Image (tube, rainbow, N blue to C red; front, side, top):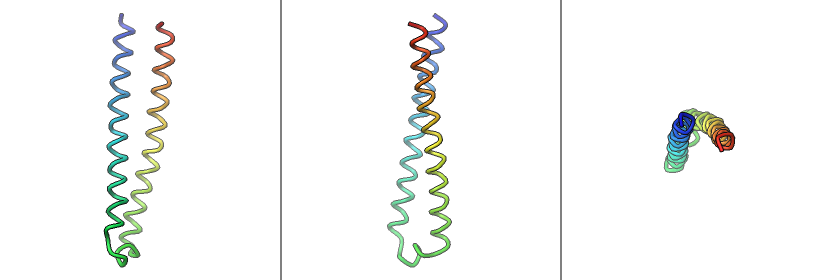
Amino acid sequence: MKIKVELDALKKVHEKLAKKGEELEQKISEREDYVETKSEKWQESDKCVDYTDETEVMQDELDEFKNNVTELESLIGEFENLCD
């Protein structure tokens, strides 16, 4: 019985992490769209380069985050198989 409670808790953590990943993905998309709305002059500026670099760092971190969430999902599946 305790194992089921722990498994359910892990599933809830996974769901919350997946949702946070989706939110970050949306934020990155909004940042990319923002650049496209700016003038050509701004897009060629150092400010744009910095903004774009920050967005790329966010994307790299999101990719790593999503890999970790996927790994957690896999571990939950293995844990479920052990409990059956």
